[in-house]
Image (tube, rainbow, N blue to C red; front, side):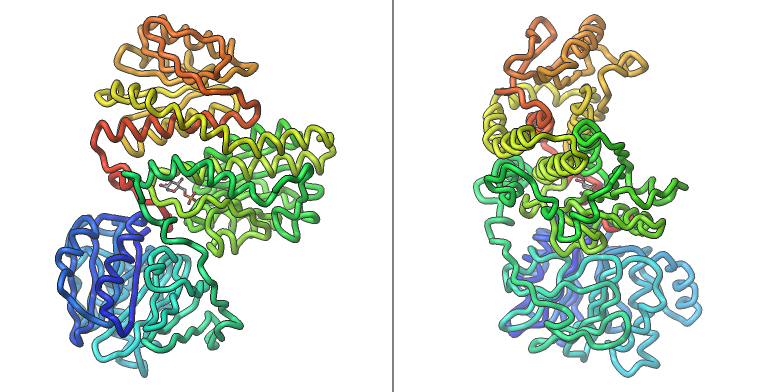
Length: 609
Ligand code: G6P
């Protein structure tokens, strides 16, 4: 959370900072601010969106500046808590949390520093200022100061009279952008595409200085990291279109409709193959996956839901036990380690603090067979894991995850098939059939997207509701959870996902005419059971909205609305059934007039605990 941009260049960098922050707004949007050297320090801050800051910054010029968009942790969203934070001619922007800020603040107060915010970040500004008294320069002072910080951070620091900007990272993402007329730093590549494609991903413990004509990096051990020997320069393959809205009204809408291409890109590597190689998951995969007798999946949010679907696939196809845990729970509970277990971390961003920490925790417990399923190459989770599978969804900017989810499902299905094959439970014919079904997914999803007008009509009926229930069974139960999450995230309607069979054990008490019940009713072995559950709802006067398959024997009647997906899709049916639920929540949010891409209180990349 929080986005950082820094620039030192011959051009006017104010528009670069503003455009960079706009690209990073998905990381937080409580307040925004920037500090420029002109050559004295000028600070502009505003509560709310980057657009507000842009108005203030209009007409400003500078060649040297840092900027920030905030997701509040310490201190309410307000101008006084907005970054940058300053200490006599020195300014700092920060992403992360400083855990020992209370002790440091006490110490700095005793040394005479005056605090003007409630943030942990202001401690960093004063600490660096204080350290400058005994350090030869800003670079040295930053290195000494961060040695005293506990927690996660990416920071950028500038000071009056200094030609460079000093940046550092530990546990939060930060990269350098090498331009032709200057150098830059940012929380992600999308922020810098406007000026360069040449990026260096910093490593934990790195401190770097960007100047107009050079960059230097010193690694955690204190030795200079050579570019490109120690820190390779990556040519970003992102295109401007990947991060532009184009003809769409919202990123979420764009990303829902991009799912056929995202799936096709993710599945490109299997090409026309009739058989899968474990190498898909990395060079060490044949050895690491062989003999896997159980799987532990760790994730948060929507990624956790994809893990829940995968459990059904892995147990059914590969016949090995699979457990799925919310990363923030796993990392702190006393669990029974199993060194032979495959640990799978699922994350769109690859930066989610709890997921990253849970993998580190598993490794510390002796579980070295780790696999990242992730949408961002070079992200912390990808680097932490021994094996990797990169989904190719492209940048996902809407806070509510959509195309990342369906591409994760495709990747997880590949994993289930690979494990099944290794367990000797799959004939060549079955394997070829699964691969053919996967390859057909983009076309199948495209057909589901064509249901949008009918879903839109349904959405109008939800806008005045306070609550909603989502029901599913089997591998569609996690899809019910995901549908409920989507609705609450962006339309602020309280929604819960339930396994339909569990309805009578509590939630049925809530059902009345004001509680819409959305049900996923694919034409599978559980359909008849599900229909009995739906009768229980209808008998209590509940209004049912059923997403069925073309051939599901469910009929519309009074109080029962049915929308049919074009085809039944067997094991991969959850990939199709989640799409109308994404569209439903999107259209309900439109009717309610909420901020679809930036729902209140949330952020996309959750790099704090
Ligand atoms: C946040 C986002 C969700 C996402 C979750 C996990 O809560 O708003 O959309 O599912 O983080 O993120 P990850 O990047 O690890 O998949």
